[in-house]
Length: 363
Image 1 (cartoon, rainbow, N blue to C red):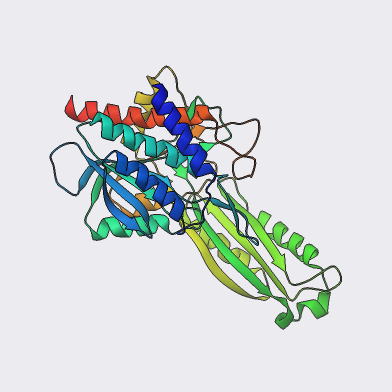
Image 2 (cartoon, rainbow, N blue to C red; image 1 turned 90 degrees about the vertical axis):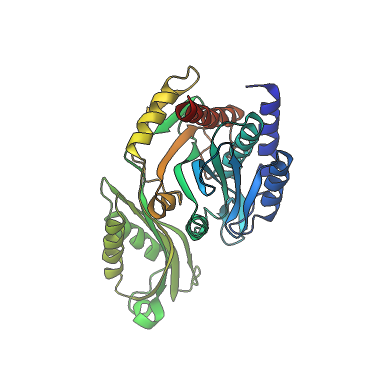
């Protein structure tokens, strides 16, 4: 990798990391991406609520078909829901930096391929992938293969983790509000919000199985240290290997509440199976590299709306993880920063996939 690529990659990350924006409101981030892609003369085919979609055409063929597509995310994670504080603790700034530099590499080196670059809005708040898929289907745009990577603090920077089977879990997240006053719950029991919350957590944990996981987060109430609550609100997330099991477990939880409640579905992810043939090809090509160590990804209950592409489009999907261990600072925290070595590895992997696909198609 030459020095110029490294400097540009690090500069992208530095700028993006300092501009965290919420889903469907990534205006500064979009402007930055557009400015850089304009410099290398890539053609923009969509700029709107879904984010940005650019194309590179390097060979003849159907005008709306692409050999490859790459997806990154523009938004940041909400660290504090109450105060709406956002931070790039999920690595989307790294993903976008890598893809931005990959697009620059493609434009300058001109492979004989047709490639789509999707800079997607709103992965964290859900809905961005749905918007992209609607656009692609409406405009009859087809793709043979689509890739996405995600950094992980569980691996060192020289590791790539990939799975042939269930790489992303089905996920169902709901916002529940329990209406305790109308049920007579307070007058009968007079329990504090903390005690009620503890009971709810125990109730959710009883649903857990080896291939299913349930968690409660974002708890709030209108009670205080000496006033019993009449309302409790919280998010509950169900994750497993099938969407059907998530729905069944959700209903089991609701049936045990014994109070009036309001239930709003916040996110609903399908499961993602990496395409088996594409997995074999990618695993083989990456394993031949002397600077990458490839390992199998265990099923870790991770969700990402990249799974929507696999469900909604007729496309071979490949989702994998790039190691981003950084002094023990976990992803999804305000201490997480993507190491420079991870940025370089991520760019190298994506560049390698483009080069190998070019060789496969064109010899």
